[in-house]
Image (cartoon, rainbow, N blue to C red; front, side, top):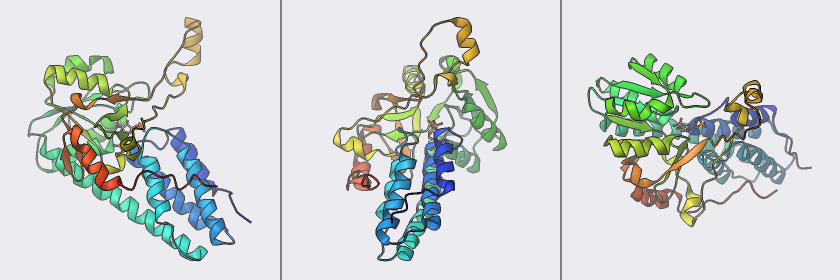
Length: 318
Ligand SMILES: O=P(O)(O)OC[C@H]1O[C@H](OP(=O)(O)O)[C@H](O)[C@@H]1O
């Protein structure tokens, strides 16, 4: 009998990622990996084939939660590729070991890239941020640890206002914060020494897929002559773009943009809510990873080195 029932925690994690209770590409990757470990620990499989099929079912459910952050499928691939053994116990152990290794790697990568990004920041810099990116914040926190005085201009980032999380976390790190509405970004670029954003996916051509509004900010930064960098650990590299695939841009519920009552007061209108956009490499100065910084156009060399085996979907078979 193949047990495809998902552990309750796996269902809960999938719902939490879909609803953005668990959000941020790195956090989503860690959450999905931990959910696979839970599934491995809790399923009652009566054969190695049943165990493997159940793990693939859990991975499929997790994969369907959000389409844009490639850290999610990269996390699932990392774990399922390391699922190995002739018995259910051996398979179970290989999954929990792989998850432990993966999550430890995420933490190390974020610390390492933070130091690389911090080296691009100077004492006294004012940094403009967009959305909430733990990879980006790792750079500012590392700069503060290096003894640099950093101030932040934080874009609120409609419609979910993840900038409020950034504002709170930077204040807690002792960084003076000025919160602005997104529309004021160009005005406050006059006071910014650096723009720092995160990424949900990095394409082979160096395109940065990140929270909606990133591309407009990058164009304005380029026009104003303000350096802009993306902080993105390599789990954000999108291997499918090596073979020409484009990255799916998630569109989210219209009521994130405008509540139903306000919308009814306006009358019959259309509402669009794309969650991400694509910044072409010409508008980005550097992609900062745990392996160092790269001009966007050369990130493909790192992508081939790390993801040369391609982007199979081990969860696809039933
Ligand atoms: O992995 P870290 O750097 O934390 O976040 C990377 C990106 O993920 C977030 O997306 P969402 O808020 O989950 O839609 C933002 O776009 C952020 O820049």
